[in-house]
Image (cartoon, rainbow, N blue to C red; front, side, top):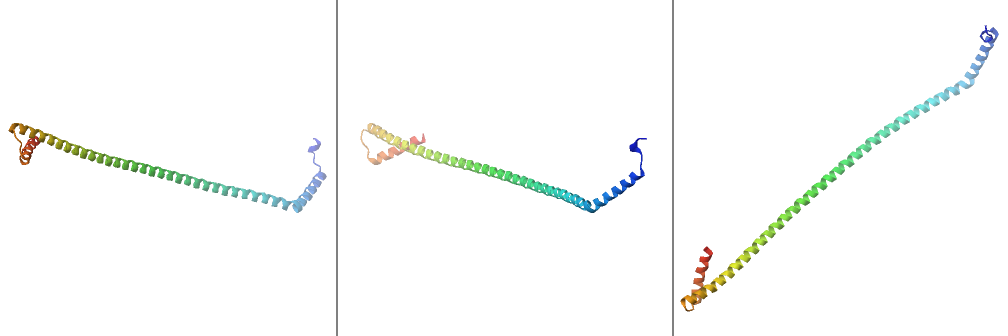
Length: 164
């Protein structure tokens, strides 16, 4: 059998004594600092986990708040666009109404002008017809009539022309 596999009772006893002394020294001087270091490390890890969870919750809350703000801004933008569209439609409608009013006024003004020119033309035509009738009457009758006769003849002639 090889030498390292042989068991010597003295070596075993001294190994146990050395191990016991080492364990007692460790228990007396190093055990408490090791336990407190392990507990401190465990506490630091737990604090880091809690801090990460708090930061995660805060980030989630900020994300939610940002989404709400974005949604509110989009809604406000849509409201502004809708209001602008309504204002544009209102302006167009008013412009159309004003254009229609101006058109009606121009048409009425043109109709009045046409009526005035027609009346002027009729008056001018009557005057010419009157002078022609007077001239023709004088030639037919051979003498001048007084103003009452002129008026009566003219009126009857004009009335006949108006009927025609």
